[in-house]
Amino acid sequence: MAMKKNVPDKQYDLLIIGGGPAGLTAAAYAIRKRLETMLISEDLGGKTNYQFSLPNTETHNIIDGQELVSKFKSQLEYLDFARHIGKVTKLEKAAKNFVATTEEQSFKAKAAIIATGISPKRLNVPGEKEFLGHGVSYSTVSHAPMFIDKEVAVIGDGPHALQAAAELAQIAKKVNVIGVPNKDLSSSLGRKLKESGKTEFFSDYKVKEIRGTGAPEKILLRSKSSQTEISVSGVFVELGYIPNTALLSHMVKKTKDGRIIINENNQTNIPGLFAAGDVTDVNAQQVVIAIGEGANAALSAYNYLLTLRA
Image 1 (cartoon, one colour):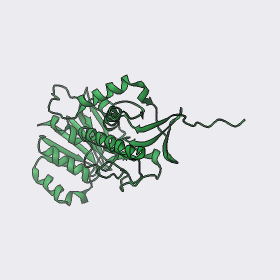
Image 2: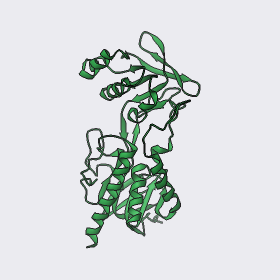
Image 3: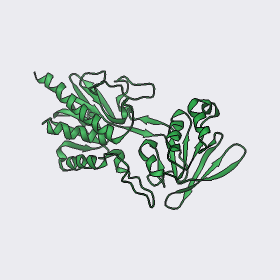
Image 4: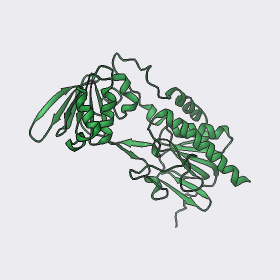
């Protein structure tokens, strides 16, 4: 007997894939516009579910939009008819609709917003997972202000790590730069860091372990010929990010590093398909930016749907 295909029987106005700051904001705005909306995500909150804190350190100087995101999250938790907790494995265009497929079922709509975010490249060393959010960060832009007059480490292999080190050098007591090749240190930014008097470079070393009690205190480094240990209060991993776009296959145009290219209306190259937040080619990966992008994508989708109804 042939198995019955998983064909969605209800058509929504708008599908939103991803439940982080951009997706939650988009859903809140779409629902206010009375759009039949379905948000599909493995969780609600995305990266805002991971709190960052340090012992004896105030967090009031961090602007991240978390309070606003929590309000959108509460709204979606209450409106259970507008959300589905699950992982979208495929998004495709079928006739005039977009169809999102999860392990359990499929959903179709006239328009869709991709807000799946990015995943940081990890060190995969002992201590990294244990201290994540408690001294280990993947966002220098977000958490640098918490390390005034402290000793920190930046771990990376290219220009992004140097940019992070330059930002930290403005406020930290000392910045240890680990893994950046010597050829990159000859750049103008590399020379500036050398001249600052606040940086030490470990170009030929790799991190083997992050040690501490409650928060990072030491980093074990190893090269081909030697081993050393440095003292730190914070660890910034700046190896880059992987955009979460596997479900799209080759549907949309992307940058060289895999981010979705959008215009000023958060429109992709496919009519009716929008994108918002860190997964796009926006300038910076920040919660407050993702909130604005999510709102813009929802309003643009609303305007697009109006043209279909005309």
